[in-house]
Amino acid sequence: MQTLAIVGASLAGLSAARAARAQGFSGRMVIIGDEPHRPYDRPPLSKDFLLGRITAEDLYLEAETDELQAEWLLGAGAASLDASTRTIVLKDGRTVQADGIIIATGAKARQLPTLAGLSNVFTLRTLADAQSLAPELVPGSRMVVIGAGFIGAEVASAAASRGMQVTMIDAKPVPFTAQLGTEMGAVVGGLHAANGVELISSATIEDFYSGEGNVTGMRLAGGRYLAADVVVVGIGAEPNTGWLEGSGLELNGGVVCDAMGRTNIHGISAVGDCAAWFDEASGTHRRIEHWTGALERAALAVEALLGPDAVQKPHKPHYFWSDQYGVKLQFAGHSAGYDRLEIEVGDALTHSCLAVYYREDIPVAVLGMNQPRLFTKWRRSLAVNHAAAMESTAGLAAPELVGAVAS
Image (cartoon, rainbow, N blue to C red):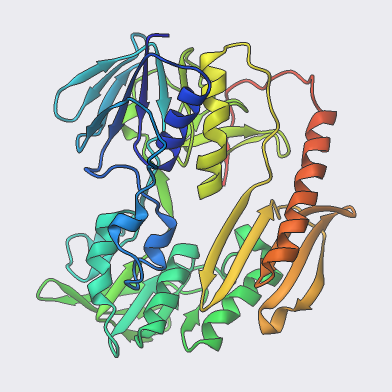
């Protein structure tokens, strides 16, 4: 391999570049980025950056010890790919041809078309998004957050700490159920009421009201009207795979990959929020949209790309964290299909506890709320059990790169 192209200049792309050099790749490396910025850290955007505790310079991820010797093509992302010749066409017309390609184009925030172009409506995914939203956190102003995912919840927490009147509305009966299950989803949802934020669940928006380019409010099913000075849309993200349509790569809710990030086209791998890797535990393809997935899986994808006979390695248990209203939430594993939940330490009602999820008496996930030390021990134990379970299934035939992507 003479030329390696990495499409995507965020954490996953930078991690892939570092892994390639660490694994001995000495050829030409080209890193393509849609944004004009060098790689930066996204999790603080909805936390410390939004509150002005850190600056943009504090977000940049490159270290002085990085010696990537890469060509950076920033501010003009990829527009299309010819997988047969491994040729990438950029939005500005330039082309890059490579022997190997790592796709790390991430995801974009979902939009509400009805609100497109209104000046007081925001999403939060990029540095530019955060820079636009931060000045709107004005004490006494009314914010409505649409969607009770973790980004929406963190924005609500930041806004409340600034003295805003915050209402968060969600279509689901209980927030965070997909990640945490109903019981602990309700506990985390209770953080909002405990901090003066109203959470309206099972909500349906029937109409929006606007004037002079702004949203002024919205009416919910049942007739309730919510006035708004600022609206934040936090209804999830979609993988940035539109530029791959017609390329020959299999796409199904993401770039479909095996358990080491290989796509159906030799010499092309994918990692990060855009990549749907095969998950041995569930038997499905799954996108992992969290920081640690982008960081840890990049090395596996590079290893598989540089060495076609690379031995499959087990994945670490899924992990993410969130900071809301001064409570540090940490989660590892997958809660899907759990049949028992135990509060091992603390009290869930005080939002300081450690909860373990069991399936047939086997721990499959753990949630810590302000329990970092104990959580770390449980996370390590979960990793050992996970590796042992994966080792017991080693030797099974690799799955075909087909199938629906798990939500």
